[in-house]
Length: 214
Image 1 (cartoon, rainbow, N blue to C red):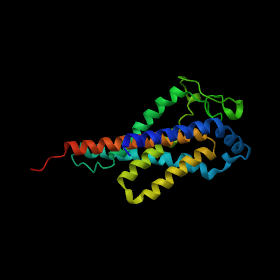
Image 2: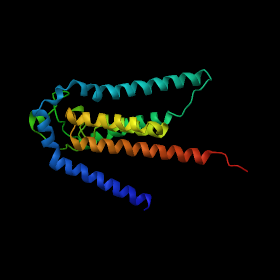
Image 3: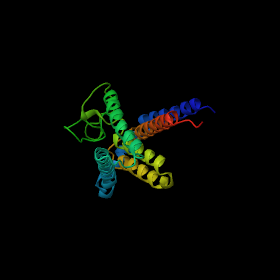
Image 4: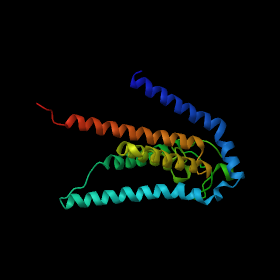
């Protein structure tokens, strides 16, 4: 099976999952979670908010240390730079995509935004920008998955840990109904896609520029 066909099958499957969730699962899941007050499960907030924040701090710290080492002419290893590129790229791409879809949030979080839980509004407001319409795709999931895939490439021996972190953050977004299921599926797919693309680019660039043996 060619890579093109493989990617086409995977993309079709993901799109089908997103559509299935959007039309048949999203509303019932959020309604059930809201009725059972799952947002009061405080431990999940640490996973949902704490882990992405810790990753951001760690990557920012690495960038500062790396920049300082360059200034002092004592550069440290640059192996983790693709993880930084992946995470930063995912942040900008997901922000752009959110403005295209303009989806209503599950709940009222910012600027008294209309939401499914409070106002029973559901759907997309195409090309509508603003923090009140940025539910799709899940940025937290996209960035976390992208970072975890990047770390998997860097430290494959700890793949189990990166998988647990990525899944835990994604599930917390759903259980706390910060996002619809389809938001999280799309976010995870976006993060994985960007991570794979950057890894492919970096690998190709390294191979292309490596000196040839005579």
